[in-house]
Image (cartoon, rainbow, N blue to C red):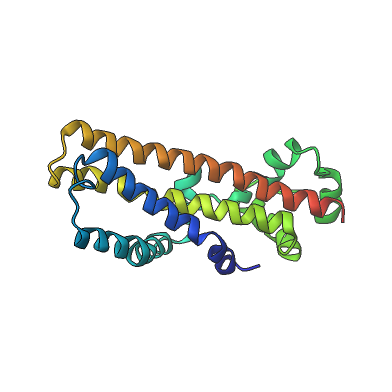
Length: 207
């Protein structure tokens, strides 16, 4: 299954996250905005959440190439991808994967991160349609894009709150909320990436 078709499956969760972020800012960081909103303002908010936010989300998550997104999720140098430690760290730690079977299938297992990704990708392509693999890949892509989407708002939220007249405490709180959201999304992306990698190894080791 292509990454584009997988993205269509989790796009609504990205939009929901964006709407939730907007609600947090309005309800908790800018007191009085929701209660004082007119019908026209509420109509504009509805337009924002149903039309504008999906477009903004898609632009933000698609502007960066996958290697840069992976760097922001794994906190590793550029070029670090989910399979970079497939055969030295993730595979041996997974009880489902037989490293001996993989060694028999691939020959000598790689040791360099780039070679890891190349070999792992060779294993991934024939089984990418397996449910346990496509589901794990979808989760990885979703959390990765959530992390990437959140990063700009660590700076944008306090700036917007400053111009809205919010207190310095509210501005700092806004930045901390989005920073925490980014860390949680990145950690979830890391764990989902490991599951994605090991699912491929486990399926291929029994074939």
